[in-house]
Image 1: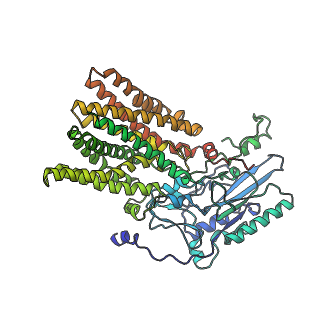
Image 2: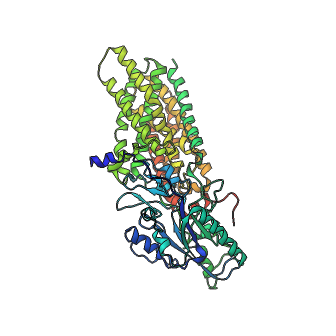
Image 3: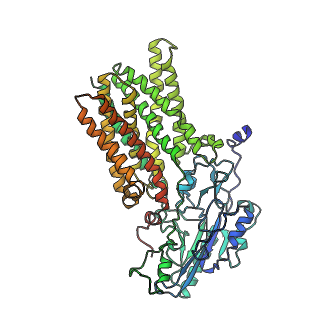
Length: 269
Length: 325
């Protein structure tokens, strides 16, 4: 146990930064086969979540969790807003935010940006404080009841180190999940939207390719066909630490104010 | 389960009532945020740590500005600080998913993480508060030197004690949990509640001198007034997302416990006993107000769960300023 404790304080030289990589998940190509879910579970040796019928279309996985790092969402739309009945599917994953709230929140430095620009939880450092769980505006991170640590998609860090494609993208039979350098993916995504618009699919748009005044760009970007809430994504995620300084200021000012008043009271003869 | 899809799906079945307005777009009305895992350990830590830091600050103020008038109070307040501080680290460690790795909290220095800031502040404050208590517990050096040393260490600990008071609410506000997210008044609310609880605890154990008791009573009233104001400001700012507190699961405890028994009743009892000095009645007021403070921290911590589980609150706090659809 002692050497283990000391290891946490050692700082080896980080690897040379590489070109940033990410996912582009094109939901118009998703057929809901869940090969990504299975490939992810197999490669990362994630335990089963049990099996429960939800009655929510084919979505019996429900959400991303400590043991589910890809989750396929199924939205059945029978008759809505003028378009013919359709079945929307989306393979959800950690967004690998350029400015990640979980990274800011992590008090141990367990969450880092690795050389591929992905947000990575160092399992040997994480002490299970669960602050990242509430920091993430997408609800990606989860603390495992089994080992007490926080877990999420690593963007297959281990596979990337060996020059391999992440398991989900490799398994995807329709190229709905594409992996590659972030800049290339953004370019591809924009071209794809243009193509869909030309074909008359005016509702296609990109989620997470650009930063907004409230939130950074994402290294896992999506092409969606309906409002983000339809896929259980936040419409406009906020950075929890956006007002950290002001909030500290108000809190300290209040405490100091009452302290000054108390000083007068105690000083009175 | 009511949701866009099934509502629209059922529109094909005429026997089911269908509201004419288009329902809000949702994913089976499921929340997308994860629930906070924090529970009673954190509630007790916020309560005891707050009393400790508050008592330490008040002891420092009474010592620096009151000269020798409040000597007995200062000594007892410092012991109370240490006593309430001791259970804090075990409580925090027990809350971790991996308690054996608790020391990793001090592995990095990271001001952007309020939890890291809090861990460092607690560490520094704990060491210094311990030294102060040891110094005043036995005669180690000439009296004047010893008092000087006590004061110096106590002064050095004040910024850390102030941080322990100020950071817990800021920590909660730096999350995506709707009822906490970016609530500016959560920091001062928790801080003022801690200070009030410190005054109440001190009133119970720290003084038999009428002059000190009167001063402490005034300070207690100021902090309770500040606490009540920040509570109102917080509830107002949280608006619809405060529902779990104002009319949901925690509403009975909130209105009866925090507002009624914790803030209003003690104030009524205080104004009634002023002058007559009925010790029993004022004791009752103090105990009620302490319980109210504990209830407030219980509710603030636990309401995060209902809030994160509420899909409409999830969507509401992440609404775009200008909607994209």
